[in-house]
Length: 394
Image 1: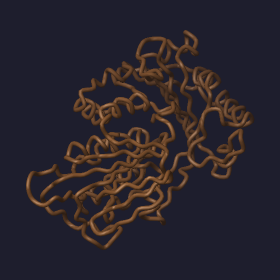
Image 2: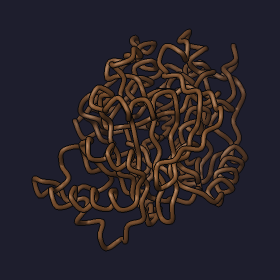
Image 3: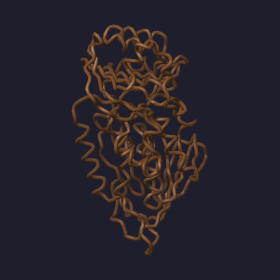
Image 4: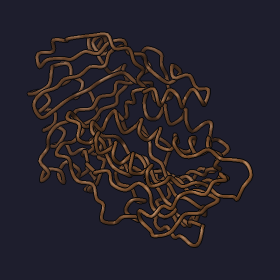
């Protein structure tokens, strides 16, 4: 959604295509309202405070539960709340759900995208920001595949009313962390399922990063129905023996408050994947966000990176031939270089729920773009643009 707004800001008409069957199921995604996100919300006349829970402190627990605190004011929102804030201003935009990208074809200056639901869209430029499992990337560069990073993110998203008064007093108004060898856990309050900010109506969102051997992943990703999930084990699907194993590990290695929080939660999980940033621009196509490559630390870095990626594209100009600029090669090189630098940073890496979206747009910049030859050896001249985007998670 953020990228759709950025494309509209440079004069494009957009249409959004999502692989998601329904709108923003609550699968857990705490989002820090970074300056880039706040700037976009301000442009949309949405106060960041209207979708965020105020935190005043950051505290780190030791294994006994003793807290070390310091002042660190910030706003924490949730993916579904942010999604609604970005979606509502796009009410006049074509928005289709339940359609996976199956084929992309370029003929002359036109791009045709075919979706699994049978719908076909036409434009002049396709932008993919459809996450780590990007169908756009697989079509453009089949050899590029994400690799397991060596750890998973166990998650929980529960009504604050489920917490005891003692737990709520500990977590309210704070970002709470615990770090130990091979693991890290974070927790904060986020808006309620309908965006509620009132005390008693919010949710507690937590994520526990823990090392897991790759050979153990298939068992952890097997649901109660027997289905083997690839990138996300949904709430309610973890096998009883898996839940028992996770809770035993929590009891043995986490501070008592975090172990209790895990016991109160309907667990779900994401394996963390790495994808080195490489190419972002192709013939009539570009990749942004996790579709182009993951960054480290993944949790705070990927979301702002997605929200600001399109901003350097040139604005539309009046007059001249009906053509849209494609991002030039130096645009791709600079961002891949920056992402590679981030990916080498030490520290934890988070994981996010992936939502897949495609957006098609029409623009009218006048200047001729430099050739884009990353994936195809042809210069791009175009009147319309496709775009595929994904959203942000703590």
